[in-house]
Image (cartoon, rainbow, N blue to C red; front, side, top):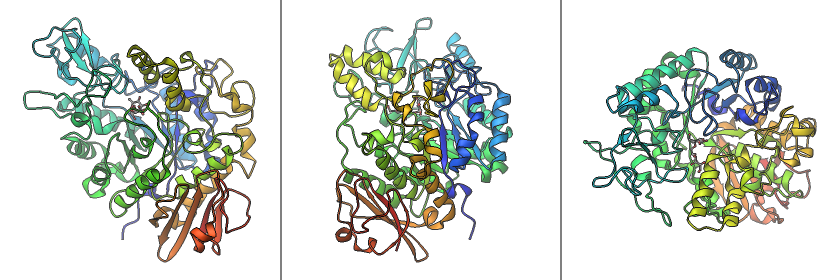
Length: 566
Ligand code: ISL
């Protein structure tokens, strides 16, 4: 049979460049900084670097608003440094994944500037322009073409005074959605992708790629969505999530772009709202779409409706969700595995316990779970150090457009500002965007200037320098887990079977390949459990890797994780 693709044994590390390492003292991380820190990545042993956007951008959404797809923003450096990064990574046996943000551009992109210039512009149809709702005057509240609520609060439509028409933006008003119905748009995107592949990059992480096909009628009609509770808006999901032509577009992209490069590439689609049934189609190699998707189910279990209405997570829900994804993509397709990224709170604060007593143990326990599932693990910068959420106290501490817009909208609708702030502190994206903690010096070694967002004061204790040589550190544990995936085919390819599905604190499963079985037992709580009673087969088994010093094999201590060979 054929060799499995290279990425089935790979671990990906995400760099969010703004917060990784600053090399020129302006307080913002840059490519020079990434180049200085490659030894950290090589030490960890990761195979791929996914680089969040460095393209020219007004930075309304930290670079996810792109004004030129074929360049590097001076804030981050030069195209020459990007080429240097490709060369340096390749020299170390690593690959580079670029962020592809093509659901929308910046409103400063020349395509949009041209499109906006006149209803007769040849690029008018490259974006979604619509007149006000029938019988209503432009600008009147409720005159928007549909009732859709933006991901970043408010309506998804912005009025252009000059033409009296609205344009669509599922995200910020400075991020107008491209019209993928127009074949010229698609060809322009494909040409840009080929240009990057010719530069030697090894694939793409495709931003909200399952939103590019909108459910539009033959005469251009778009439809209102069901009401969003408590707000004068509707939910756009049924019109934009995995729309009617999404598979066709991804297959066309595949044919038009990858060509002879296909086997060296990794293609991962970020897909909010994707179901496991859809993911099977997206990742079935025979269909020629993408290699894996980022799904969102496990990061939507600890809130109700909106991410800013948090509720406690139930372990049984988490296990049921992962279990379904592991089973659903067992024979066809492939999973991506992540706890956090630049859009999510820090894993140890959200799924673990970041109090001093449990932080190291819960971070290493979560790492064990991440790396031992079947799929490709993604480690987000700082996760390998057990970095935690930030101690934000006021709305002035936040930088993220999503958080700032939500605060303004919620307070305007009468919510208690203290309650809104508490939700932001728990769920806000800036938690993941404080600078990487390299050492205990001022600004954690991130910059010699003033960081664009303050470093977490806990860097005095929690930093890379303190962990690199410490075999008990979170970093050292991640490094062992990466190596285990490279060395042990059971970790990469073994079947997954969930055990004790209803247990409220233990997360246990087996991985099996050709009669060789690993048993993984993780205690996701602060109490001891009688492992000998719950899973007797665990007691005599050989320890492959654990996160605490060896002790009584019949007892699983708080946040203890063991990988055993039965
Ligand atoms: O963070 C989220 C929860 O509110 C998501 O809705 C997030 O916006 C979604 O996952 C899409 O994320 C991606 O596209 C956004 C960008 O802001 C994110 O940083 C990016 O990862 C728009 O480009």
